[in-house]
Length: 94
Image (tube, rainbow, N blue to C red; front, side, top):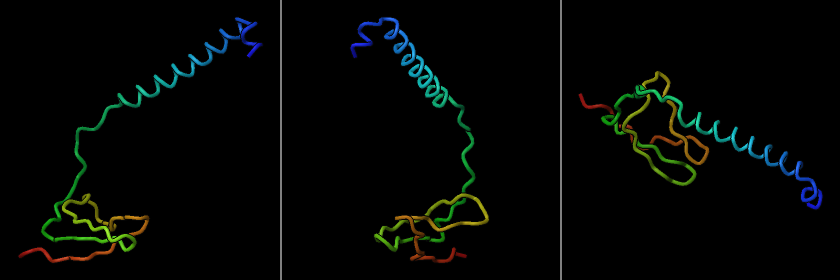
């Protein structure tokens, strides 16, 4: 600390370095926050009529699905780092 107190130029260099790092971090954060978000909602499919209920085999938490992403390959939800099991899977009414 004695070295910094005796050498003002070293204090100025350290201050400029810290200021530069803060400046770069601030602009990177602002750039990330101001990125344009898509106005389009992701495609989803209504599956409420199927009464899909899943249960976590580890802790017993349950979830009821009402909408899923519109894809051909649907994976069961995960909880406690494990796939949940289907509890109720009624068919759609005719």
